[in-house]
Picture 1: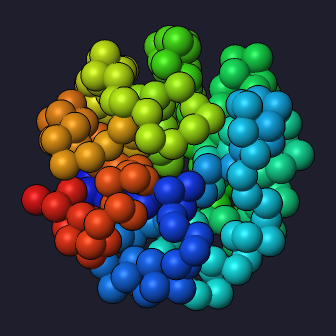
Picture 2: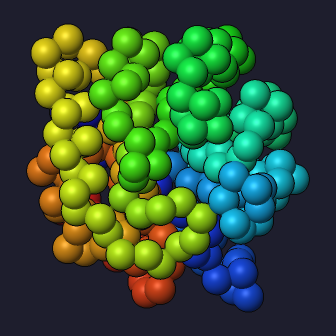
Length: 219
């Protein structure tokens, strides 16, 4: 399995205390920062634009991990890469689960020197995308319905993780398996045991001692 990476989600950052929280984050063992980009259309919430990403990049040393929850990822992926994204994932559902369109966008993202991957909602079967697994750097499994932070972990989503881990081993591939939603001091172990090596955590990290919370997810 790949080295475990913690990707705190800034969706849960306390923006009334941004400076202190980012300083604590920089002192932690978190290697990635996770940006949940929502357009108010693909999901019923609106979050960050590219200028926010530029600001974080100036003061954070972590890899910028951008998760596009938008209706038009083909338009927004290059915008966020130009703003400093180093990893971009997008929802297959936004491209009607069309394998050709998904592959084309993956190739475009990678051609810009950026890590690439796709995301599936809880109700989307992961098996549909087996032919794309040798073309990605990571696959992101949603363990909640996308759109809002603080939701409960959907343990049944770990079946998708186990399937991805099995295929990764059988085909000797190296993509990362990322999980997003409801990760905390208890659920993270179930995710890791199923095959996840990249953990997105929001409320759990930012509501407490940030370096300690990140470290607890690495034990």
